[in-house]
Length: 343
Ligand code: ADE
Image (cartoon, rainbow, N blue to C red; front, top):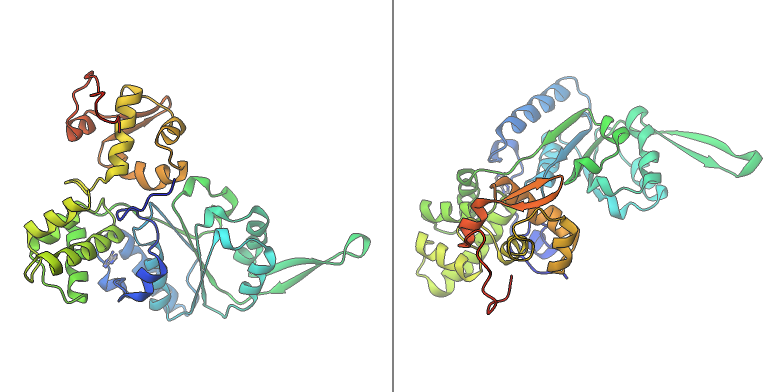
């Protein structure tokens, strides 16, 4: 089952990306949060520029919606390089990748999103390209088969993944630089909201920006999405500036609670509590009970619940913590009200 979630960290739709004004920062100096990462990136960019060399291959890893694509675009901009974007699942054949690689100029940046989903054959084809800037391919078959080496221009691969653990060791080792992107603080998200409101020509009170920040589950993409929902609400029901009360009301209407959980997050926790006595329970059992895809839960539900201490992941399975009981107003050991649905 595929549910629409405005707080999903999944990529924005093309309409959201292109039909509206882009809220992505295009320079490191405009980037909010991830201070340490930005400092390191600033240094590696400056060093490469001084040597007049292309930047090293970089891997960004972390939960969806935290800025991996934005950082790749910023890297290209700061290096004054062209960027060509692709993704693991769309590069199905070595021929597709060869076409891209042989057309790259020196210093160009190739961005591969969801790089953990590269087909193993395509991945292997990429190794010599990354290490020695050449591709090897076979011509002819059987006794006449010969390997042809084709040199490439020195390019920069930027990989992005939500699942660093699924990346093969040989691929991971070919990245000179690995950057982990973590969830943002509420205050950083409030800053993102304030910046975006400025770009959208909206007036917003600082407390309203903080309300949106707190409910954005550590994720700038969610913050921008919530801001757009609050804007709609304000335009119809409000009187100009976005106040704290308007922001709270607008997000309550969307079913997003005080810590940023939506119905799917709450259902997930209620399944563990009401069906499995609080856990431990295997992740697949939860997915089946919820009629939800495993990947959705692993990528888009669990990371934030783990981060805010509502969920524990143990060898025996998932456990709902004391905090999640308190948040949902459920007493431990209490029988669920059979009159209501269990989740
Ligand atoms: N928009 C989305 N993410 C952002 C960030 N990290 N900094 C500034 N604006 C953003």
